[in-house]
Length: 312
Image (tube, rainbow, N blue to C red; front, top):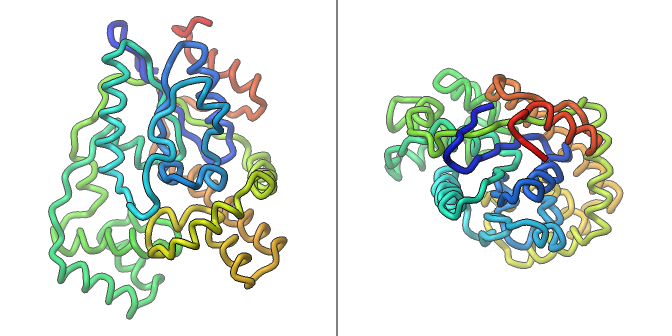
């Protein structure tokens, strides 16, 4: 783990959904007096705390939390916008002499924070329109195959059905002649020292936790959150509208699926999402120390064993 003997420490905790990373981050924050910074692209949005498994009021009272539920769902944030906000927050925490724990499941956020994110040149409107027209004409499979020839990393990491990001990757290549992935790697890191760890629980255990979480979300008010989001009639292409579970529960609320079928579909999508997160972590965070435990106490002990400099 990277450490600094002068500046307040920064821990990075990444992991798939339902892996226990938020509980680990909170325990660490309480132990060392740290503040928690969100690195989950969906937990940014206000009004979606339950459906995105954001921290509860009781948890936010136990340690300062930043960038959780602070963005209006009508305002779609990019990686770059999160990076600017997170950099300011982490700098402010350090200026007050306190450590920070950055926690989440969005791998691109961590890569931007530790490797930098270049300013992408402005894409002309006609190029953006051409990319959208190509997607509609070609269909996702053929469009993704074409993108793979220009930016194989983007084609591999972008989730099925994510038209917005697929078009974005292609339009950047069409406008600049460079892969979006390569451009994103040419920036300057926002932080100079950090202590990383990635949670990688056994897949089957994680899937059981994902399924159980969906039922807990329903009981905690997820349907009310989705109902309120639907009432705003927002653009379906906005990031918040793609939060796992929103589409499936919205189908139930429109009378298109039973609640049981909606839950089953949301559970399936959650497992797929967790699988994509773990695949990304194996490819992009291969050098990060791993925590394989899922029991909170065993996970904590394994974390302490990885960090001899941490005294509790």
